[in-house]
Image (cartoon, rainbow, N blue to C red; front, side, top):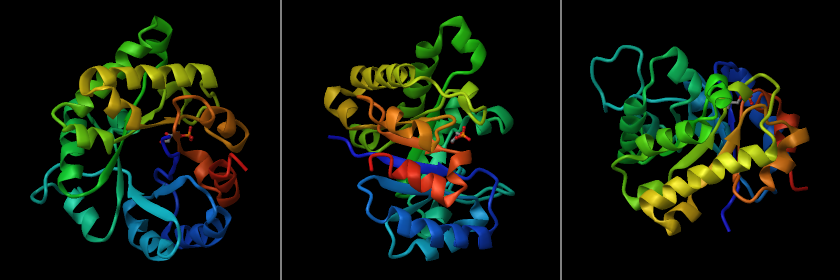
Length: 250
Ligand code: 13P
């Protein structure tokens, strides 16, 4: 059986002192969970988060990276840099980066390859917008995004990629996909991976759901056949609420 992976995406929130306080409060609340717990924090919090999460079961991730190793890319941070301080995960291709920062399927693919090159585990976001959903092309969009993101990866790399299905219309809106709908989309992604990389690979890939996950809907979403946990935005900013999500099965 696949493990559950529950990741918080703090987006552009939390100062270092707030990150430290969060981890102090959050760590004891999730110490007994079977799920893998990840906090994806702003760059300036990474070092503090890593130090304070030592000797806990909390893993630390970044929210973006550049695909080059180093060079004249003002304001960017490379996978090599993230790895050098002990970061383990990195979110790639979040819809906010696709929407506001010109992230494309091509740069997403390059970043995933670079993440593996430097020993980071990518959490890759795919998802349809409202217009696409209303047109009935959700499956087409998310399976194409998945195919382009994973293009050229080895089977082993695909197995170690976490995919986060995040319908854009559900992010930060309070609107959640029904668990049935979300599970069907996740299944479609898994079927696409099976077609491209084989059933055995597809059965191992962790596919999360993201979009207005909270403690009141986490259990239902995470108990479906194909959803392997969540990528949580707003609700991951409060230690007690996020701990309830992590402990959804208790
Ligand atoms: P919310 O949980 O705030 O809807 O955000 C979801 C998200 O974008 C996580 O990456």
